[in-house]
Image (cartoon, rainbow, N blue to C red; front, side, top):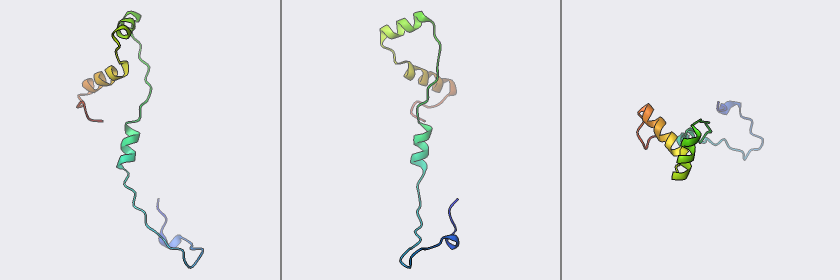
Length: 76
């Protein structure tokens, strides 16, 4: 909650109150897109085949979850 100007004590006659406007969407977007760890279990044979094929499990899981939620590929 911002301070009310009437409640701010100025210590010196040269002190001034300055209003600061902060544009928050870039910071909120960064927090929303922060990576988190989610464990997932798959059969060993599937892991071995995926590793041999050089699969990116994180990307595959993200794409599968987006598809299940009907989220556009580029959103979020």
